[in-house]
Amino acid sequence: MKERAKNPILPGFYPDPSICRVEDDYYLVTSTFAYFPGVPIFHSKDLIHWKQIGNILDREEQINLTKAEHSGGIFAPTIRYHKGTFYMITTNVSHGGNFIVTATDPAGPWSNPYFIKGAEGIDPSLFFDDDGKCYYTGTRERREGAKYFGDNEIWLQELDLTTMSLVGESYALWHGALRDVVWPEGPHLYKKDGKYYLLIAEAGTGHEHAVTIAASDSLTEPFQGCKYNPILTHRHLGQNYPIVNVGHGDMVETQLGEWYMVVLASRIYGGYYRNLGRETFLVPLIWEQGWPVINPGIGLLEDTVQIPDLTPAPVDEIPVREDFDGEHLPYRFVYLRNPNWENYSLSKRKGYLRMKLVPEKITDLVSPSYVGIRQTGMSFVFEAKMEFQAKLRDEEAGVVLLQSNRFHYRFVSTIKDGIKVLQLIRCLKGEEDVLTQVHNEDLSRKQELLWLRIKADKQELCFTYSYDGKNYHILKEGVDARLLSTDVAGGFVGNTMGVYCSSNGVQSENYADFDWVEYRNLP
Image (tube, rainbow, N blue to C red):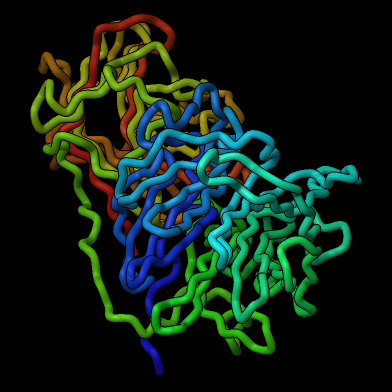
């Protein structure tokens, strides 16, 4: 029996995976929505162990996230390789639409975007045929007119790579496997044994999500669906099955002839709640009678996956602590929307992340002073060591557990009515409520030193603080984390957590220094 590895292969908020192979190297990208930098890129030698080697959209001129909703911004990237060049194509649903960036080194730098005129809709993908021609596929409303919202077509048109423009006639390829299907999307084309295969997602991103497939003898005629569609879904398993909303897949063949698919799915806990967002899973497949069979004999995603017949290639584990000793933050750290770089410094105080207090607030569709990482486990501890002294009314600094600008918890040091306090603030449906506060007893220091800790036991949160890093005090325990799930908050993202400061609408010269942050998952 083959060995097995843990699933998901990318835990936490890594949705809409796309994968490609170049000889014996594998590359994978995912969506990032309103977070910057956009589209993390990972490398693997064995499909099991993945290392982030960069972020494709890491410059402001590549990605405009101004006023993007938390679930706006960058949707559904696709990565492909052809004759020495990597191509990443995606949608900025907030600004500009569908565009391509290119690179000869997948670690970057990547080009500025080429926006594709006439490429309406979302979820673009590229396909290179045997004759070298490139084709664009995407999702848009039916050309004959939609009967309802989400009544879409998967369409194709040739793409001239020298001008990055669509040429020739466009074709409607497929409208999905089911009658009155909602949101056929996420198309990827493949060619195998002389036939063309179109893999798509259907039924939106919720519990009914599914992967379906169709085939054709040519690219210019309608595709015919597989008779046993959907080829992968969990919608029939009920809401107590631990892995839900499976969909949006991309297939890859190994150099040894095995086939695998990366797909998104969510792990629920504490009820039907998906705080982790949509994660990247791996599943094997075989081909029978001209169609893929997913996880033969099982037909489902599992919390482990059969390891491919590839040489194991472990990567270094992500450190629990980030000490801010380098010149740049590690690739896994993210900002909200396009960051104002002058608000962040790793050099003004060596070994610290200095963050300037700005009027922008995390509750608004702006770029606040916020640096975060993804939640990757159901139970965890997140902690930061901070030096900060509020000088003006409503200045605050601390840590945030963030689902969106309208749903989050802030654990901050601030001044209220002339008194220094620690507050736990809940933001629910955009309305802020101070759940509890405590007078900050340590007033002797000119610069206040605080350790702020969030511990999650599944859906129960505990917020504690310390003045010396040894003796911790409970600010509040038994706090419900369910409001941080997409099932309460809506949208498409998982949780991040990070350090934050704001002067809440007024100008300030103040700043907060963060010595380190720690994140570790608990059993």
